[in-house]
Length: 169
Image (cartoon, rainbow, N blue to C red; front, side, top):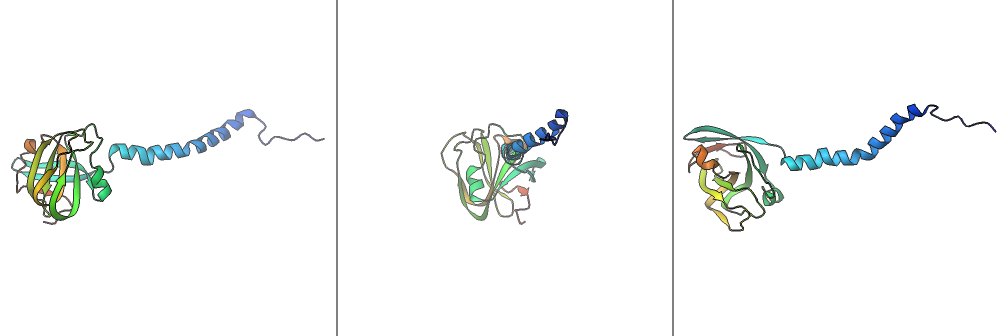
């Protein structure tokens, strides 16, 4: 009987094939990590919002919550939020808006905005983990959540203009 010639004669040449096979088995893990888990931990893509107050223009990196699911989750379970970061909740129509802090560990300021991007009311220093309802008190189109103390720090007041593509001045 003739000896069967191995496809790879040298064991050293087999290592790259084993590495490729190992990498192929690990692909689902890396796909999940880089395309699902890490973006979710980072909070998604950030956009730019500019607040124009008596103290000048203030730029924020914000996440946009447009869908009911995104708005329901909001900033829940976050343990920190950068001073120039926030989340803009787009309700897509003007109405009295009710928010809460359920499962939200970071104290927040909620800045309620009109369709034109003007401040209609501010709820400062919302209590973390509270289920108390925080109302806009009048019709609003969107809510900007930022770290507690931000509204005071930037001098935000009713009537100030916030600029972002969702607003139609």
